[in-house]
Image (cartoon, rainbow over all chains, first blue to last red; front, side):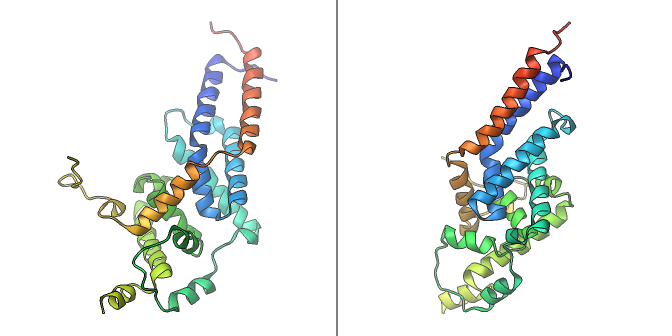
Length: 180
Length: 64
């Protein structure tokens, strides 16, 4: 084993503490992406192990959350490319739901939102989870996803619209029927 | 009394403009997971990290 400098050891300890503090958020982001609890926890642990292994490439003082979320979402996309069971997005199902008659409930159930979220494309889902659930800024979301801020904003707008349509039916119809 | 108005000249995030049930549901989903007890599996990885740090400490160079 090579001898590690005290400075490097101190950085490792800080990195470890940051990783521990981020576990709840990593689990929540992963759960939102994957849907299922166990598969999401596996992904979060995998991301943590990868983050630790790659800690030398993290610059102390920079955005640790963005760095770890980037690792997690990259691993998510790698996994869904390899394992079709991870692909919860079904365009046919989404289309079928969109053409169904809108319900007239004013209230939204969290379970309905969770189900609808899994029918969105992963790209729309991750933006909604990062900004809507995690409260990250547009700028941080762009850094995590690796795209322009304008792309984040357009994906967020489209994702919100699609989510609302999956829950309530095509935009406007639900409100129109409630008002009638 | 709380001031919920947006600061002048600053455009608010879409999720902050008014009560939005979808945004509230997303936040609730997030909060439900973050308040769960962390599964023991996660601590196995942390134990491995702690063991590596402890081992490195035992043979670390003393500060000059």
